Structure formats: structure tokens, C-alpha cells
Amino acid sequence: MSTRKIQKGDEVKVIAGKDKGKVGKVKAFVGDNKVIVEGVNEVTKHQKASAANPQGGIVRAEAAIDVSNVMYLHKGEVARIQFKVEKDGDKKTVTRLAKVAGKEAEVIK
Image (cartoon, rainbow, N blue to C red; front, side, top):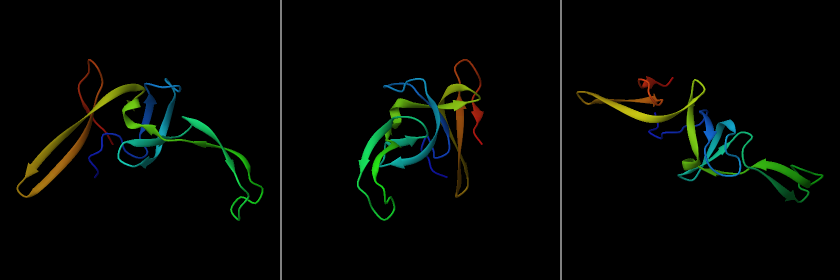
């Protein structure tokens, strides 16, 4: 299990930038601290004709957004992510917890 706070497939809410307030799922990571979120930060790209796209033209695509500009959504509310590390001899287990303001931390998935 990766120890990133935000992971691929998580539902997140944009908290800063031109798409503030939009919600989507994380599709991919770009580098260490950028994510591509479904339906967020869409850009227009001009593509040449190629074997994959014989017609070419103007294509809409999602661009990367900094991971600091998104927050994890837990049951419809934005939440901070915490890690709980349990050691049992040589074995170490890391559990992700969602901390919603004013509530007890809950285990994610």
C-alpha cells in the first residue's frame, strides 16, 4: 500500500484555483505532486493528424493540478488524511484514516 495521502481512484474536491468546488476522481499521478482529476482543469489542445488520430484538430483534455489544491472527500465532506502505523514484530501495517472536522477519524476502504 502506498503512503500517499491522495491515491488513484480517490474522490477529491478542488479547494483552490479556477475549478474550485468541482468534484472528481483521481485518474493518475504526474510526477510527485501533481494529479489528473476527472472533469477538472480541462484544456484545449491542437493536435496534428497521426495514425492514432487521423483527422487531427482541437481536442479537449484534463491537465494536471497540484495535489495541494485538492482534498479527499469522505462521505460527501472534505477530510484530512492521517496514517496509523501498527507494528507487530517485524511486520508493519499502515492504515489510512479520514479526519472530518468535529468527528472521529474513520478508516478508508
